[in-house]
Image 1 (tube, rainbow, N blue to C red):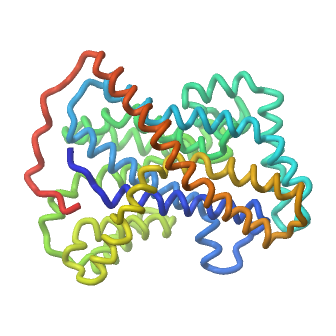
Image 2 (image 1 turned 90 degrees about the horizontal axis):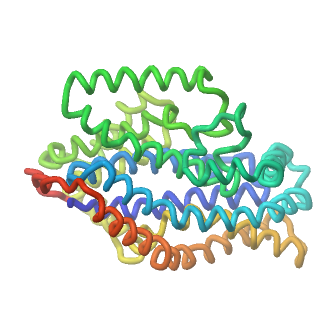
Image 3 (image 1 turned 120 degrees about the horizontal axis):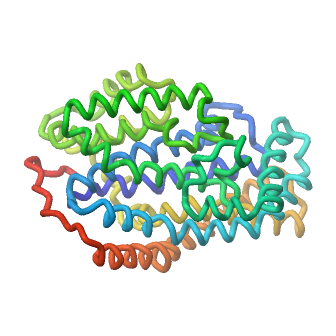
Length: 385
């Protein structure tokens, strides 16, 4: 199967982006005062790039490995589930600690803190008062589909990051159907029309209200960008193009389709250098160094665990510090960065001892299911990554 090395490296930068933003929030830095703070606090932009990456990677998997739907979805399930369950359990036991931080923080009079604290209290109340339905929904990884009117905060009760895990799972469930549609013009047109209608219905509240964009209907444009990027990759890689110029043109074109400039910019630059970095000289070599060095690759493999475990570690260390030392926003921010430093090796351990065994178990279960297909035909264009 064609392996896109740089994407592994990209994932750790995205996970760190989210972790830093969450650390700033817990330290009371909720309102951006400059462009850098605005970017760091916009963790939703990093998640949007994660969605694009998922669309790209799953399309690559489906193009390269022909197997039955049962085998495919079994392997995907075991890829997500073990680390997700472990972090949900940890998050459950830290709910009261998070509430204590928001209630006792010396900066609780800061602008925006009341709303932040109210959200944390809602999460703890849901865990306390409606534990059974939240457990049942999280067990299926479909909790992101449930609107507020049915169950409040369903998408993020135990670990807030779990809302996007549900989103990924929803995409995994339908991705093979999307790829089948892409190969048939009539089916593709029908799929595009249905996606647009569902997307329209979501944004007009026909499915209900959501605390966060955890329903696939609201995120289809990002996954679609990833799918289109992989389907066009081999043909584009055969061209000789300046990556910087291509990134500028692609960013301008995509900005006509979305008002989210940051994830669009990040993906266009990254994708252009994946395709044509070999034509970029020094900038191309720097790109490879940034995304394919051994430390980056190791942390990139563990980025899924980091994405899940960083917030529990931030809450745990923040609660311990609040009860033992005098804290202000600056010292709490230092503690939050220390929590990320602790979470990094912990995520590597989780990758080797939780994620990889889960992947092996999924592969073993999938082999027992019927439906191995013929080997996928190799792509006519060599991979540049």
